[in-house]
Image (cartoon, rainbow over all chains, first blue to last red; front, side):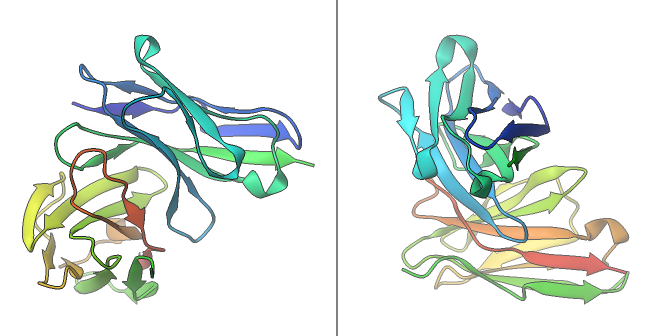
Length: 113
Length: 114
């Protein structure tokens, strides 16, 4: 069965500091990996995804994530946090067959001015 | 292209009632998935429809049902509402629903059960 673990339900960073949100998955076969962001009272917006190829994936708003098979991780980073980055972030995986998504419990990011 | 739309955005019902939520996918998308989001349980998969057929189902009671129409629009129905059904219900669409397809989410329907 697929599962996704997001370490840290709440993360606070200062404006301009590095953002690091952690995601680990459990699967015998590397799944497809996604990061979504959710702003208050809105749906989820895709930040980036990994399917195949280059393991460092660049997304929108300056975010990127690196797929590390040996560590079963897909951590999300951004070099310099902006106030507008404050939101809930979800890591998700989908299997190689089918399109059912399994979501982590989310990480709430607070950016301190 | 217009995004995924969900109606209504907000809904208040009482226990025992039933409710129907609607989702219009992005034009050309044939797969529609539904999720329930609550503070305690997070995002949980309800079911997925593709070409009017339910293809995957999550671990929810039979009170939760859905359907998809020939134009790919989808509805989900919850009968005999319980207080615990209060949640944000999210609909997501994708092109073919195959592995690796991006799911595009609507803004959700906020259901409150009193």
